[in-house]
Length: 204
Image (cartoon, rainbow, N blue to C red; front, side, top):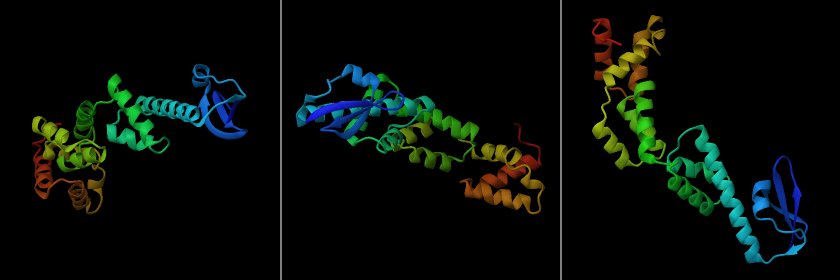
């Protein structure tokens, strides 16, 4: 098989075998793994090159995604598999773990506090969201053993901030009540929250 390359847009390099396009990489990779045009390579040499290209693609994708926000291992792997093969994805994730860029326990702590303190989610919805993000049940249970979630306080905050305008509408209180129950707050939690607010017992 005769390998050749052509330059694409920006930093892209397109590789061809016997004149047919095969795969795209970038100028940095090609500078490190350059093969002179017209070189005759065998299948094993080609597959080794493809494996390196896909791994670099997976690592670059990891850096891109993690630069935007933290991810759990499961989240990151799911996103990687949209564009790279399983072997490359798993190798890239192992590299991120080795570098300390992935840590499910740390991610879970940050996510938990965001959902509790910023989003004011109920305990049940926090657990659901964390499961959805790929956090293991062991990490979630351990976190809930050490951290408190005050559903009544969270309900009060939501009533006074996010849903305050709804209260002025016809049937507003009932609508807000129903909304909070759908969000995982118990009937008792919501009733207590409204009682505290109406009796000026809640301090923000």
